Amino acid sequence: MHPDCWTGPILHPILQFNKYVLTGYRPISSVQDCVRSLFYLHNELGNIYSHGIPLLCFLVLLPLNIPWSQISVTWLGVVHFLACLSPQLGSVVYHLFMNHEGGEPVYHTLLKLDVCGICMINTLGALPIVYTTLLCYPFIRSVALLVYILLSSHAIYCAVTARSSVRRLRSFAWQALFRFSFFLLRWVGLGGGSPTSLRHFLMMDALAVLGGVINITRIPERFRPGLFDYWCNSHQIMHVLVVGSILYLHWGVLDDLLWINSYNCPSD
Ligand SMILES: [Zn+2]
Image (cartoon, rainbow, N blue to C red; front, side, top):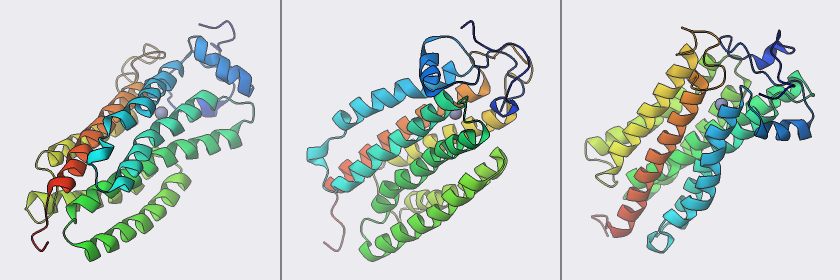
């Protein structure tokens, strides 16, 4: 632990977004000191690295893993790549700079950035799913993509202005419902898509929901406040589950993009 690490009462109550994390808070810091906190132990270190390391890996490995030459709709691959990066990017910046000396206004701006990252993967991440499901219905496909983007913009506004994490989750719920209606279309055989991708997408949502529930219920630290201040608390568990969820999205979208290339619609 860094000698500056704050072990007494929290200087800024807002930094204690989890009341069961009792120690290891960084002092209020300049930008440089926030960056320096990457190199000593404090209670945000696990949150920063559990999204920072996957962010670097995705940045380098995802473009290599997408078979661009076999994809007929290139923009779907690009949108998917950006979707996969966005939640970690917002999260790393939020967790790294949340103790910035700018105080509450800076904190709330960073929190909005973090929430925006989640909104972006919900929005951009679903576009390949919508596109593939309606591959053989070009007009309905365009309308559905447009409606989804418009409704998502409203959800982003609601999520960013939400005052509690429960309210924030609620504004994501309708996006999940929209996605599920596409899963349903696939399941009953009306929608297109690789036979293997639906399973991946369901795993994606299951992990995301599990992460959200663990984060809200503050398990395990609520049972032993203080014991999980540095490692293995609910927020870190959620971060890891989110990364798992993104991997399932990636595998599902890869299957779908390759499927598009090999599938001929009945009317063609
Ligand atoms: Zn986080």
